[in-house]
Image (cartoon, rainbow over all chains, first blue to last red; front, side, top):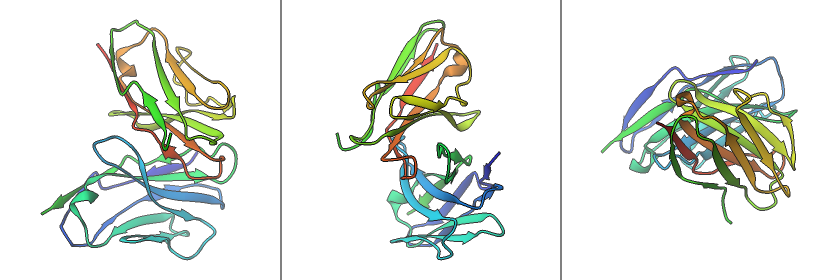
Length: 115
Length: 113
């Protein structure tokens, strides 16, 4: 079974600084996707960024980028120029590229932005 | 609508009552997923629909939980004889196909007294 581990229950960062959230996963599959979702107090899970395992290039979406290390099964999220609106729970998620493609989530990291 | 819509937003009910939670996916999305988010268990997969069929029900925690989807659109998650451990946020997600990213609704917060 696939597992996703987020070892940082809480993180804080000064506004405008950079923060990195960690995620590791375990799978025997070679073809899969990894995601970072953001969940603000509104409860809606918002897709931040996704990475396809077969792509070596790290995904980037504006201020958000990932460091994907396939051999190490590591998938960290870097947020640059942190903004107050970035404050939320961040979940790392795994999805196999076959079958029903359900998401397996980590336990989340609560990110606080310090003004 | 523009996004996944879930109703009710909040539901408070007494232990032993039945509840129905509704999910209206994004138009045209064939895949629909239910997840549960609770303090003790984190985010857990419950059930997956492709069209009106549910090829994976493996996450349903007991036979008190059931779900259906009609017309390839709206889905209802039913919990019978609710227990306090059923208290959680129930999230619905949909995707164009099983291979596309999932879009989530705002969830239903269920509280069992």
